[in-house]
Image (cartoon, rainbow, N blue to C red; front, side):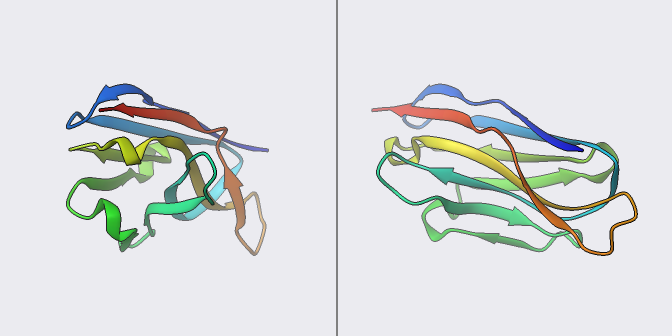
Length: 121
């Protein structure tokens, strides 16, 4: 059984910053990619930024220069530092990870419960 527990969401004014954290726990053998997705009202869930086990990153163009992802492999934790936030960043942010559990040969996809980020203008 694997859990992803997120924290760090909240209400912030435009131009402000937030740092999201997501910690994975359970019978984890290894973690491949970890990342953050977001889902705004009436829109599809989209990738914000993801980071692989070799620290390669991939992000959506709209957050370029404003968002930084990092991971602490010893803690099975991924962080998302968001600066210069805009009202259009308002969404529920979901943590995602591809995790090999126990003695499994393949990694499965896991999601956190989501954390609300609201940016006021």
